[in-house]
Amino acid sequence: MTGTFTAGRIAALLALLVAGAVTGTAGWLVVDLWLPAGLLLALVAAFGVFLAGRIATGSGLGVGAAAAGWLLTYVMLSVPRPEGDFLMGSTGIGMYAYLLGGAAAAVMCATMRGPVDRPVSADRPGR
Image 1: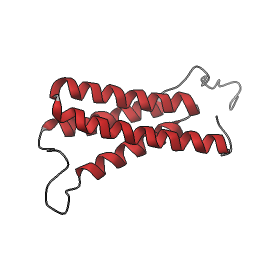
Image 2: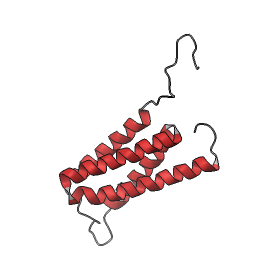
Image 3: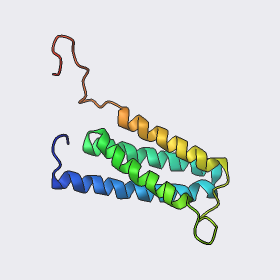
Image 4: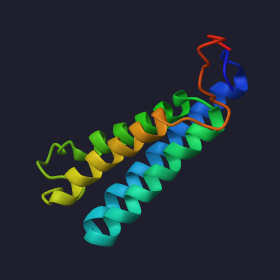
């Protein structure tokens, strides 16, 4: 899916944005509830959404859309409410591990090469 932005590509990117937001919300809730296993489950889910974005769009743009939804949800849930409390207690190291692990998973998926991405030969550059 490289090239211009068609209606289908825009719809896929918006769907990935929403999927990233849903995954971020679910991960935020699971990390504090079941700390060791919940953190692993949340990171695997985030990696799955980022990888699905890479496969669906064929570029890092899909990963960026899913990661934007994931990060936006993470930031919105970590901001304290006007009453002074959070949606869930984010006092543990698990939330920092979730943020760093999710960011690392997004970078890995955005920079990976697929079977279509062949190395460029020195004899035929750009081909």
